[in-house]
Image 1: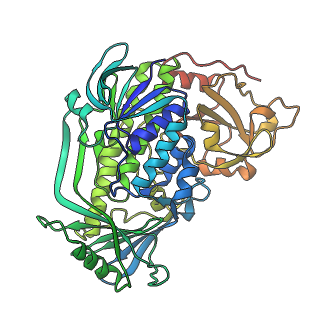
Image 2 (image 1 turned 135 degrees about the vertical axis):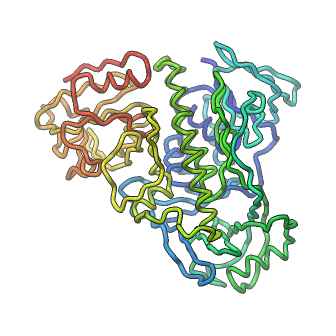
Image 3 (image 1 turned 60 degrees about the vertical axis):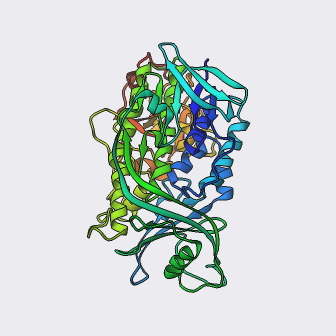
Length: 526
């Protein structure tokens, strides 16, 4: 099998490489610089990103270095009083990560790089600058400038993770639509003691809204981070000006030490196409989003959840290449109209340019589900029906396209098991039924599609179902999903629900075949 070529070893390129390695797909990851970025960049990872990191084998290493946050505060600058907070504790049954985490990007990237360098499926090649490439019917050829001179590499596909000024996108001739705003943000990392010497009762992630002078305050593992807008046409502030700005928000403190700073423009720009034959755009190469509510990097990780499993199914011969078409169809509206517009609404709200909050109608559960990116519902059927804002006070019945909650069940061997563990690496068919009546559940004979019956009754040893039965104590999962007995829920490898239908013979296999475009794996029924 030819490797997948990935251009750009930022967080999306590194995460995509880990995703391909997870599915056993060889890759070559190219970075034109000699080292990873040391700039002060994105610093908050949302829950859905942590779920991807868990699957790709790097969540524990990330959490070891990160600061966990269960309250996202919104504070009115004038009064210095909290207006509302997002409390992620309401998600404790929905995910094993009921929090977001703060970790600077230049601390995250080495963790991802170390994980990439440990996997046997690929290599990270530094100081390799893309010169040109050709995409044909059988694969991709790319030429790179390297320390040893020009070199040619062949691969099955080319993934552009090379940022907002993507060389790959430019060579494909794909235009970018949208706007680059006449706004700059200043991001500053400071060493200041707001915990002991100068105690402050700020949430670890706090948004100070104000018509004249808004600011975002982030407690990083080893420092505090401040983000605020620069006045139009303003010169780069001096260190003393930065210090004065911070003190206007936090008040007098004993000592402030500047650790790092960066200013950048604000964009809402989307590539007109995300795929050209065997070339795919990902992350900032596909979409540049206003960096509010941590939607920039985390929206890119959604791309790194969607594409690797599709490539794996196609390269293994388990799916027709048409499966790849769903990547842009599903992810583009989330980035363009969802994350992009949500971030812009948040930007206006911070500056008090609009009376309405961007999530004014959201209740506690819906607000937490939205702000952690767990609430993304994809347009799986191509009908144009998708969403990423949840307004409910309590979880509604499950819909096609939603992420399946990572509920706790009890597996065939009696041990607790999470739903997402069952999804790992395969499609999952869950048959909600009364196990006492010994429903006809296919045996698990294929690595592509697994079958389990879910019941509040435990399967007796003589039922023939013990190896495919999941105990749902008190019907908690069935009630959370809002489905009745006799319901089949088919889940894709990216945790999104592909179908909710009545149980019928061969139904799961037929649905699977319609999705991947090849005959379904056969599993004999009991």
